[in-house]
Length: 178
Image (cartoon, rainbow, N blue to C red; front, side):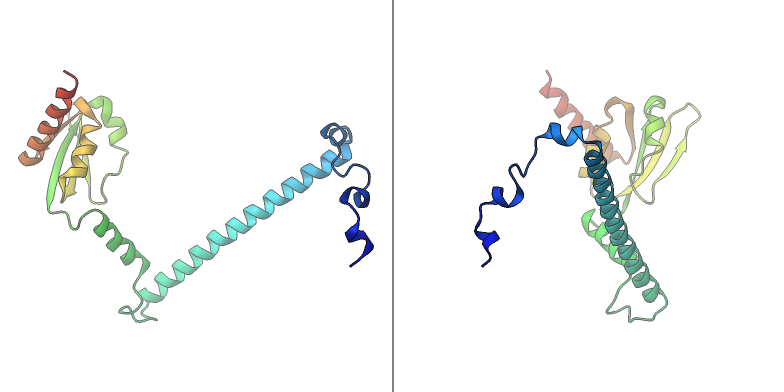
């Protein structure tokens, strides 16, 4: 045990180890050094994050390439793209077996035309300025909620059971406000 370790901290560092903020700001060299250290630390953090992302991209890319080139057995090591497709299928309830046809007003169509609701969606502009969107789906619950958020700016054109379910939900919502 050294003599320094037994001394109080203030006697080792001098009379005031934490000078007031005004003293640091008053010395431009210290302020510049602090700013330089802060920029260097930020740069190091960005480099570390960038290297992490690069490593992940290289790792996943090499995994995809090696499975596509059959360098690894696809039975034991699947492709990342297939894993994501299967996750998507599990999350959104399986294969779509119905197609919803939605017609949006011209006002709302500008935004809806840019949205991606489903990978196999098909959209087209109608002569009257409305936008028609065909979306494959299996379970209507989530689709009805998405339709309802557009309110009077959307019409469910097909299928009839989706149209009726949406109408029931909108009527129930309207009863809450009467």
